[in-house]
Structures are given as structure tokens and as C-alpha cells.
Image (cartoon, rainbow, N blue to C red; front, side, top):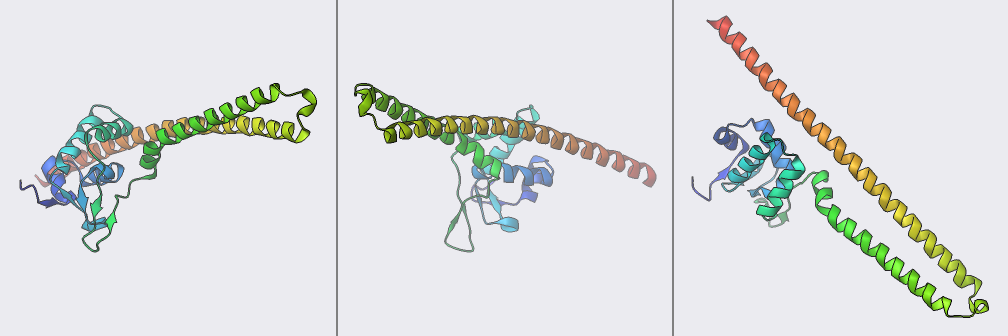
Length: 204
């Protein structure tokens, strides 16, 4: 197969013997790792995408989650930028919101942790400085400012904990939805086979 040949979803479906509907779902779910050009119905994939589709199919068949597949692809392949032949601008793949959140989540957690540590350090430093001062030298304004800083820090910690809980719940719901989607696809294939068998029996 020539390296420069561009393939449609229909062609990839025939090569891999995977339903087009399944490939459409995969191309949207893992868009940033599939080398492609064009947009929407004009989107075509480079031949390298075949191997990536094979990895996706194999891992999902083995029972891995979409997050496992995403982690494996991020380890093996760079993020791709799709080139739109209709114009000179570079168009990044339209990755689903879940993907973007998954990729940004570590950075958000790191930034939140850093902010918390900085706030703690500043607060402890202020306490150390003020402890060396005479009791009467600490103004009410300074005390009020310190109390507000402590309240803000506690509110931030509570907000971070709430976001973590919400993220965990969303992941659990996504896993349930993906499992249900797999089941529905299996049921559809079985129904198609059943109907084909009936048609064959009638036409004999």
C-alpha cells in the first residue's frame, strides 16, 4: 500500500473488516492520534492510521477502557494536526470534550496543588513574622487579612475536593456508557446475523 495514499473510512472499514459506524466513533474519540487531512465528509486518513486503528480495535476487544487506549496512544504516537486542503490554516482534530478534559486533568491537578502549597507557605511565613512582633503591634487589619487568607485557603481546598469527587463520578458514568455501547453494538450484530439467516432461508 503506497505510503502517501489517503484512505476514507469506507476503505479502512473494508481493510480491517470493522463496521463504518464503529470507525466513525473511534475517529472522533481518538482524533488527535489519527493522521488525517480534510474535514467532515472530506476527511481522509494517511496509511499510518491503519496501524493505530488496529491498536484501538485490539485493546477494546481485550476489555481495555477508552482511557487505557488513550494512554497507550499518547505513549506511542505524537498528537497530530490535520491539514485542511480548503485553506492554509491548520485545523486541530475535533476531539471530544472528554478527551480534552482527560489530557488537561494532570495539569489542572498540578496547578491546584502548587497554588495550595504557595498559599500555605505564605500563610506560615506571615505567622512566623507576626509571632516575633509584640501582641499590640499587630493591627486588626492584619488579623482580618490573615483570617480572610485562611478562609480562602479552606474554600479552595474544599473546591478542589469537590472537583475531584465530581471527576470520579463522571469517569464512572462514562465507563458505564461505554460498556452499554459495546453491548448495544453486539446486540445489533447478532440481530443483523439473525435477519440475514432468515432472509437466506426464505430465498432458498
